[in-house]
Length: 173
Image (cartoon, rainbow, N blue to C red; front, side, top):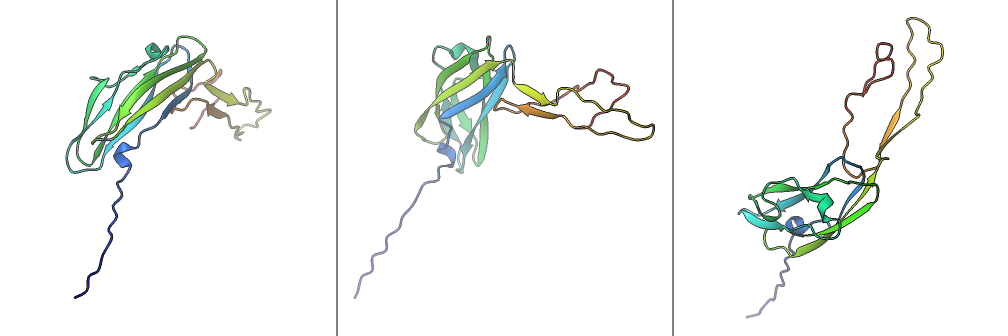
């Protein structure tokens, strides 16, 4: 008889436990509220609990949860995810910082995350600021582009774009 030793190695997937250590809103217009989503994943076949703790620190009042029932426990259904939505509403132009403890679904270790943002007036810029179409002959088009730049770290949707002479121009996005 002879024996053989086989070594088996298992490695856990990060998936459910992978949460950000930094939540950075970037620039946000003073008086506006923007939302940052943090995805809690459950890659198992059974429901799992996670947690989004209270937001703490000197600037905690500027941040909050959009989800009802938070801070608190989160149940993530099997093979799905749940988005925890953190809001930020600056009241003045300055830097803001707070902290929150997040724990992914299914026995994950806690993550002490920093929440950072800047209250600003300069969130959306565009160039050029003025357009000159020159002389355009009847029946011909002159096309100019304006590039919009979002300096925040959350999506911004442009709506109700108008010109100072809306009957003379049309736009396409």
